[in-house]
Length: 383
Image 1 (cartoon, rainbow, N blue to C red):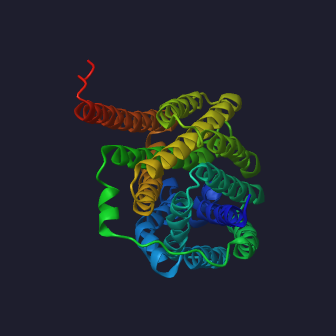
Image 2 (spheres, helix red, strand yellow):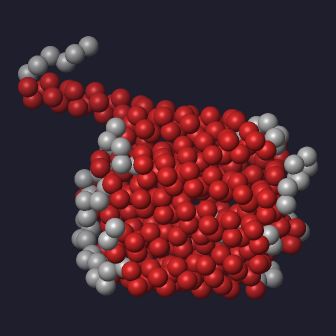
């Protein structure tokens, strides 16, 4: 594994630990500030929403000033804000700083996946997602095991700062910018299959963040009434997600992997409905493994199908984090108002819509390819 891959993996560890640090301590945050679960979830939602807004502008900036400066500035600024968050006593200021932190973090996903694709390293995208996954898992476990809101996010910020120093050392000193054209941006929205994959990113990530936002409240409430330290162990499921994304993200038959893994994600969600620890744990393992494998397959497919990698990768990332912001917040509100079973039902509906979008676009793309082949060869189109 070369220094570029190691450096980007370190950036993923730091970025995703910081991005989701409040998630395992949302119940404690809600108690500290005397707010509802939906309001507490804003600390995750505003960060992912700001990240979604910042992806495309920072992607274009990276092609002017270079990839390395954008990556380093992104993670360093976010880590510094993370160190300040435990000192904030006003919830509105906390939400504002989380939005700024999310906007800063946008520089990492804006650059990392596109750069790997432009260098012909499509197989490394699964490894990148695996690194992001483990970063999210470690950050959540650190915060959850500490068990308090302020202590938890402080611990994550310290971890991320150490990893950031390693990332700066590991990244190659020079990463050449890539020229962008408006034609490239148009090409990122010209194909139905790309729109469908952006839909997978939006709906899939919305489902994923909604379930993980709400599970902390469910595990902390009666009849389960688990401590933050025990409840945070649910994030160990991320380890399976990291393995599945690395393994299946390299598969050549991406449409089959994507459909299968969206189905596995839905099955995992349904298994969490009983109020018992064992089915919840098994369900989250399957849910997480399916989601990250689907994400890796969709991300690789986008970068394979797009004529120009940067714009398409940027739009995919923007859809992904917009889903985290909107779906994660809406899902938490659904749970608070109507309970876990309805949240699961809505999640399965979102995943089904994602699969339907890809199936319709893939079918249209296959028919179009067959017609072009028939036109070029003079052979009749099979019926």
